[in-house]
Image (tube, rainbow, N blue to C red; front, side, top):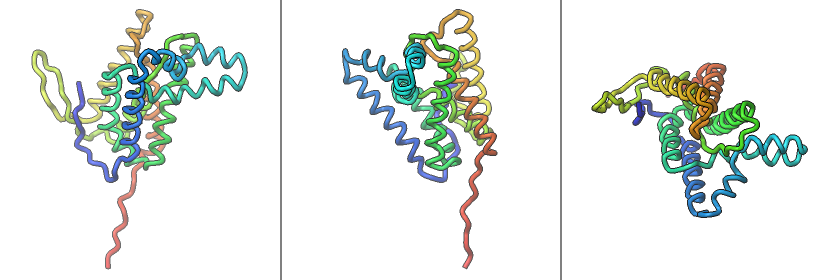
Length: 231
């Protein structure tokens, strides 16, 4: 299922969501311009678990610098499809979560969700030499939060009913529930075959769980309607 849009207008302009999308696009355009220098650039700014493990053993100074790659890697992507998929989901679901959390709260939430997903990915892959890039962990956190806050919101979705495709308005709980189930199946298959296919499926799941739990703790972060003073 491919979500196309949601019928859930936000009450405020999603400034942070738009800025995050712009930063990710600009960063990717910068990657393209690097040409043959791209590989050393990715090796320096992507999260590489083994490099962080070695830095931690070496001392606090180097470890801090390498640990920051958990942040920088969130703004790097491995290709146009990787970027487009992530930004598409952020554009559809990010505005409403930003509306609920406020601009500053949403920015903190987004960055922390990405860092938590990266930290948990590192914890179970400490010896991996594969660079990890992408905003997927942070965006998965946004999806988890959206599911808690807007489970019944209608999401216009492209549904494959082979050999045809049907556009349907489905509840967010169905669309996002299907998404997280697919992450579990993909992650389980990756574990079974001993490879992830280049995708950190379990980082997605952990980011989603973080967003779900945080929004539950915040009680859906319901914002009160502005007071209307009667003259």
